[in-house]
Image 1 (cartoon, rainbow, N blue to C red):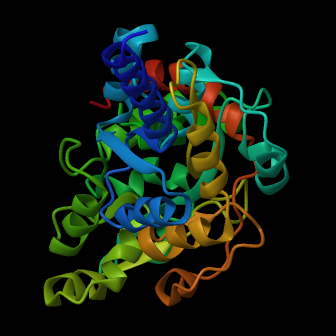
Image 2: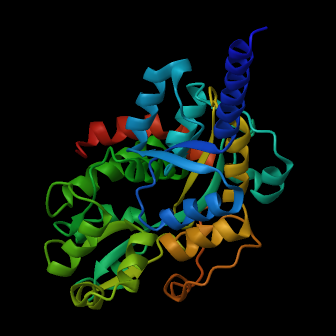
Image 3: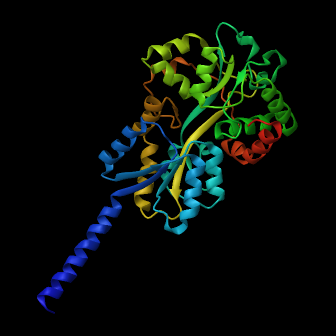
Length: 341
């Protein structure tokens, strides 16, 4: 064999080895978590493991559609989604591969993960009610059902009904109260709205503070985010509103999750499992609590977030996450029929 040929073969082997090593050091993440504080989470993972994180951030449905279109050619290793129903949809669509990890099964409670090991929850948030401090007696809004009460006509504002946060709540109401009552509730809630649904959760809180409406729904972490803000305008908003844990005397406050799993066609499966296991570590769980004001799902994780802790304890809805996820198509039909645009 000529020296030149040997050199070329040797160079090719080195390139292949280098490509393999580079592949093992990369994680391609598709995430609908759009929170700036997650940057520290990913940076720490890279620092701990040496695995570089490449990520694409889009909404839940946009990511699912992208994965469907990419098919077997998708570069994605891990999919993170901020809603239980969308996790279930991804599982039903065959987008996840089962993850065999004794660590994850030990750390994540059984009711917060897929029975097949396709996805795991890593944080949770509550759907709370915010009311105007000076115009709405707290006793007037003690439950989600109270949003539909005649006394609250012209007081309510919400996100659009088809938003995942709203659909999961409607699914929970349907699970507890039945489809017929859930639809009657949705129709009456729409009739009580002060304005057409629009904006995000922070917009709803601000609308209550400004007097545009008097009652709104928000995820708990948006409220805590305002609590932690140093901006005078955010402090003014908080001075005008009160947060309420709904349904404490009945089925409890609705809770949703953020979670993820390994994509079925993941090119970097080892990195994917390492990343998912990292998200269940005490260190990563603390990032969820301290960075984005969510609750860790791992019992041993310790949060150091005084504002989050100041909300106190509450009775959470114990409805299994899968019960909510499987009822989301029904929830969509309910909001459509109710005109909750």
